[in-house]
Image (tube, rainbow, N blue to C red; front, top):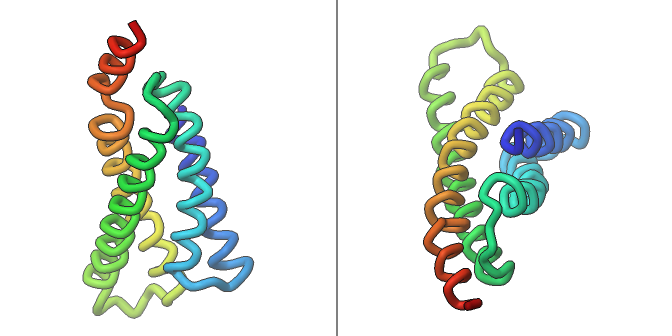
Amino acid sequence: MVGIVNTVVGLSCMYLLLHGLGQSYWIATFVGNAIGACVSYILNRNFTFKSQSSVSKSAVRFVVVILCCYFISYDIGRSLVEWMLKNNNYFNAFVKTDFSILVGTCLYTILNYLGQKLFVFSKNDTAIMSNDSK
């Protein structure tokens, strides 16, 4: 449920920036993703992973994961769509950009979940924090 909420928020912001405000692919995806990431951090920290690690420690890791996932996913998404539709004149540039955003978002969602689970809100950090407080 958390993934659906932050994906809807992020995608809505991306498409609003892209089509409503005429921003470029990179600006729309970066700002939309940043807004979705804020929602993601709060919801994942409190509900998905129920993390007890300090906000300062988890926030730094979160930003690192978000930025890595963002640049990898949206670059691959755009490149993949350009490659797949290279010789296809049926789709215009707007459709190709929209499709690139969807592909990038799917890749981002998978990578981000894994990064948060394994690096940001890992069970080991929660166990260490629990032992430190004893």
